[in-house]
Length: 484
Ligand SMILES: Cc1cc2nc3c(=O)[nH]c(=O)nc-3n(C[C@H](O)[C@H](O)[C@H](O)COP(=O)(O)OP(=O)(O)OC[C@H]3O[C@@H](n4cnc5c(N)ncnc54)[C@H](O)[C@@H]3O)c2cc1C
Image 1: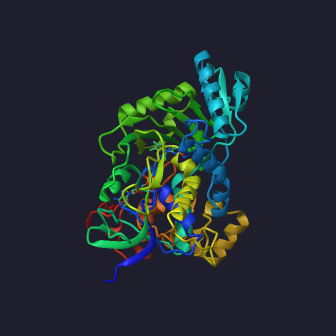
Image 2: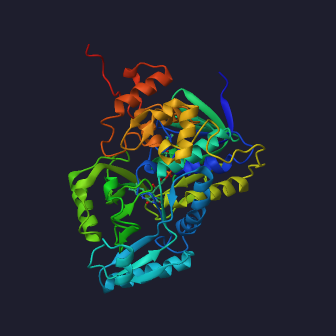
Image 3: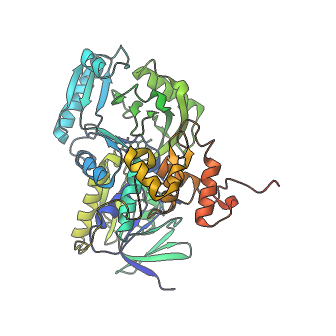
């Protein structure tokens, strides 16, 4: 069989890879994204704090600082173009004593050098007016009105779906294990499978160093996996915080935060612990104790009995401390986007433009695509039932009665939403893929009531037996066999 050839191949479908695909899809090029996981956002992008940081945290003069501030500014435009929930809720860093106040002043000065607008040090009374549930011991806060919140995997799905709609090919369960270069083009292998590309973008997150080694390149730093654990609180608690609230940072980083999410929950976490494995997303008792303690420092009355789920993500922390986005010194036309730790989500729009500029400088000719589709999908309705107005709901049900069949009662997800998710440009084929696209199973009962119904719909739509439906990967069967 002929090997498929592309102008650009992107390795990794996290937010860096998918956002890059979204930017490149505006041009008349053949592009593919290769992803080891079964879905978009299989790495750090799936599990993080979901904060669009304002940009006062990154050291002045770094690439991180530049791209964070620019990415934060671009976020509103991209999310409104693609119908992604985004809220410019602002962030607060609270301080408890004179030392903290000095730190807050330093953060403010740094933010101003980085170009962050509107930073202000608040007095205790101003803070308590904005966040009445915050600790009464807090004396000051740094307020950043430009910070926001976004759902990281929803953003990744949106940009991936837009690029797929504009012709980008996505290969899942394609774990790159070898790369050859003949001086003109790269051949990229995943076992027996292979594709060819003139230009390659290495956006493999924690594994970017391993991809670099495949072309005999060594990144000039190490990637250290640092796990962060979280608790997610029920929507009943959703109003206890209006802003993302941090404590004054220390040597371990930004510390534990309490923040609203765009879906109306409260997120608490993360800690930051180095782990042996880049795939270690386990949640530990000690970790949960640590984040509970941290959350109570911010908000002593926070109701941690309202936890509906816990999870963890792994940061690709570079020992150099900065993003590394440049052409390989060993191989032409091979771009590394490595060490993209926090604020990699906030920075992604700017990171992807930066990558496009490097590709242009490498000689990739970029002509605007005719008939470029700006929106998220061309296949049917992209709004979920719970997002629709009453009028839109009536219209949706009139066009398709499956929108009248409620499957997930916690999150108001209908059969119509689930079928739509299964048939979107990047198809949802597992329970978790449906869950992240529709929120079925994300509510208080965490899928106890709807999981089997979702499995039945997936089986029916994909024409497979229900025992073949997977939870999250190709070896995660939901059902093991028939009992009678
Ligand atoms: C605990 C935590 C909290 C964070 N909080 C925030 C925050 O609030 N705000 C913020 O801006 N940032 C935050 N971040 C950082 C942010 O999540 C990352 O910077 C961002 O997700 C990195 O995206 P990426 O696409 O570069 O990497 P990833 O999302 O890890 O994507 C890399 C992809 O490459 C794939 N891959 C790996 N190896 C191969 C291979 N051999 N072949 C094919 N595919 C491969 C992986 O499966 C993965 O899907 C946080 C991160 C963590 C872990």
